[in-house]
Amino acid sequence: GAGVSQSPSNKVTEKGKDVELRCDPISGHTALYWYRQSLGQGLEFLIYFQGNSAPDKSGLPSDRFSAERTGGSVSTLTIQRTQQEDSAVYLCASSLQANNSPLHFGNGTRLTVT
Amino acid sequence: RKEVEQDPGPFNVPEGATVAFNCTYSNSASQSFFWYRQDCRKEPKLLMSVYSSGNEDGRFTAQLNRASQYISLLIRDSKLSDSATYLCVVITGGGNKLTFGTGTQLKVEL
Image (tube, rainbow over the protein chains, first blue to last red):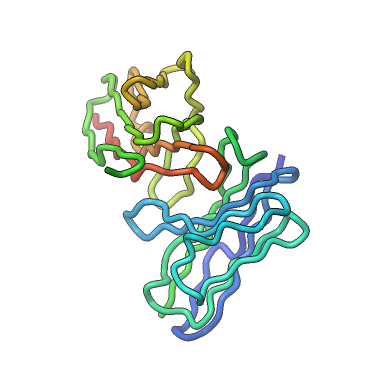
C-alpha cells in the first residue's frame, strides 16, 4: 500500500520567505509526527497530532513554525519568515495508534534557505 | 542523564563479523521499543520491534533487558549493505512520549 507521502521533496527558498510543507499519512493512521534533521544530527521532534486531540507543539522551535492537520489526515507544516538555520530535512511520520505502534516515515522535504 | 542513549560509534567491522549495539533508557515505565535503520540522506526505516521475549529476523536479533533498562541489536554475518546508522526508539506512555536515540553508526568493510 501507499506509504507516507511528503511534498515537495526539495525546496529552496530565500531568507524571509514563508514555506509550506505537506504530509499525507498512511490511510487509517491516527497519529502524525513532524521531525526535522540537520545534516549529521539526530531527529528533532517538532509536533505530534493524535486523532482529534489538541496537538503536542512542545517541539516547535519558535512561533514562526506552525502546523495543521485537517480532517485527521493531511498535515501541513508552515515556516514563516524562514531563516538559514531552518535549513534541514523535515520528516513526517505516521503510526496506526499512539501507543505501541511503530512510526512510518515519509521521504522528507529537504529545505534550503539561502 | 539522557532519556535514551546510544554509543554513536562508528563501529567499523569486517564483512562477516557479528556486531552488537546497546541502547539504554532512563524511564522504567517505558513500554515499547523499536530499532530503526537510517541510510545516509534517507529517512529512518523500521528494522524491527523489540519484544519482551526477544525476537529474531534472519541475521538480526533484538532483545530487551528491563532490569538493566536497555535494548540490544545483534547483527550476525554482517554485510556491506548493513552499513547505516541504527536508531533506537523508546515509547513511554502516550504516543507523544516517543524518544529517538541519536543513533549508532555501523560501517562494514571488506
